Amino acid sequence: MQETRNKDDSLWKDFRNGDDTALYKLYDLYADALLGFGMHFSRDTGLLKDCIHDLFLDLFKYRNSLSYTDNVKFYMFKSLKRKIQKELSKKSLFDSDSDSKSLQGEAVPSYDEVIIETEIEQENFKRLRQAVDKLPCQQQEALFLKFQQDLSYQQIAQIQNISIESARTNIYRAIKALRQSFENGPIPLPLFLMLPY
Amino acid sequence: MNDKRKQTVEEILSSDKLLDDFLEADDNMQLDKTGIHRIRQINDFLKIPRFLFSVREKEKLKLRIQHSALKFEAKRRIVKWASAAAVFIVGILGIYNLYIHLQDPDIVNFAKNLGNIQPNEETRLFLNDGQEVLIEKQESTIAYGKNGKDILIGAEEKVVQALDTKEPVYNTVVVPYGKRTQITLCDGSQVWLNSGSKLIYPAVFAGKKREVYIDGEAIFDVTRLEGEPFFVNSRDFSIRVTGTVFNVSSYSDDNQSSAVLESGKIELYSNDKSLLHREKVAISPGEIVIFNPDENTFSKSTVKPQNYLSWRNGYFIFKNERLNSILKKIGRYYNVDIQVVNEKLSAETFTGCLDLRTSPDEVLKIIRNTIRFNYECKENKFLIY
Image 1 (tube, rainbow over the protein chains, first blue to last red):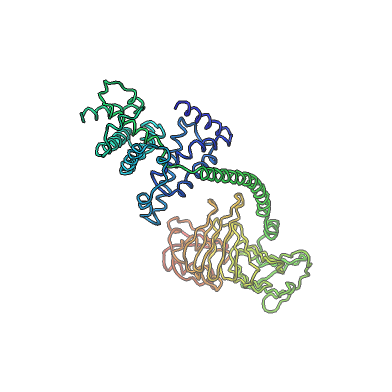
Image 2: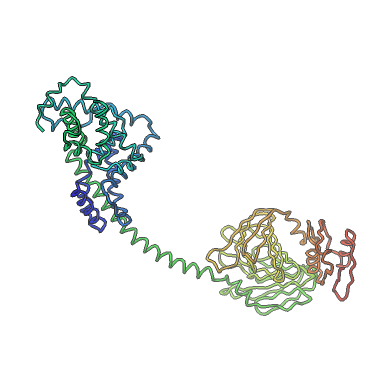
């Protein structure tokens, strides 16, 4: 983790010093994560792509005035969130309910199915998927930032604009809800125990 | 059991490393294997990215960003170059403009070089070839023919001046105190020149601009000619006219200059050229503009124009006008010196119509009917106390 952090920082430094390729390396590293993060706010991939485009273009435009940021990832997530929210508020002026509709409804392309092999695990993952989808948006976002992006509570709190305590509570509640999803489930516990780890 | 688990989870959550710690935990943590396994499942699940670009989409978006970045870069280069070019062009234009701007109209230069013409008993008309015409009448008329050569003075006297067509020829009329004259210019515009005033004008207007210069007070009734604006230059400002009747008062011995519009439309431009920007004001009929020389600004207010134009018909109309100002006008009209010794008296204001076709003595008597004062007269000098 420290290693990726160092790599980020050196790419960031290179970019600020005028190396354009460093920016595209950062893009390669983070485009997926940024899109995944954006999914918490809107399922409109067109809009998300526009926002990611704008985010990188802004970095390019204002390269000279960019500050040394101790965590590039955190910086990108924070500004992407700002952009998405700005776009959404712009959009909501025209059609107020289209976004909430798109958040429910149709299935979203997901990676889980590809990786998970055993049936039981598939079943469990499906269960977790459903449990996660039931969580409030803010908790989903917090889980994403915490587990997929390894951000600290302090950074999560800053990105979500809440206190550190609230960020902790969100994660705690989310984990608790996910665990409960197992307890109510029909899958026999012993099966889990047999799995090697 | 439930309580304990909650406790543990909270403890773990207070650490930034969450599940790593959790999975490394030994039995003291008092979690059964099922619990650990569940946590691990959750951890695994959460670590898997849920939404992904397809490789193609990701590359496509990257190309789009690169494209925009290049476009932006190219634009920035053009803007840099263009702004440098723009600064240069603006600079050149600015210098040229300044040069044009600082250049006085020919007629103003002529007026400045003319110097002071000694006051005389008669109205004097200076023509091109050094001819000087003296006009004795108190109220006189000077009328130019269209060619600018033939001049009719009064009803009968005819004067002819030679005109060199290449150079503009300026004529000058100087009206002493106590006299007035009415001039008809070659374009048919009429100028009533009040006492103690000087008008400089070309015998024939050449070019698109019709320009005259006034020192003193005059009423202009300008003939409207499309595309040939008329300019009245004076000490403090120049007036752009398009067919109109207005009064200008710009005496060199008066601190204040003003213009009153009866009909049409005029625009005033201050003469101060220390700044690139000239103070400008447009007025509508019934408005007066007073120039404030200290601040180089114009102030505008509403008045009755006939109060300011009435002298043309031989009377003054005053509205709340201070006695010293009234007496100054009367003094100019009759070419007499009137002094007010009493400060309090000079600040008294008057409203009304004053007939001027009598002597200054008679006028003062009329004023004395409304307010008590004494005056004595010695050799055209009146002392009021």
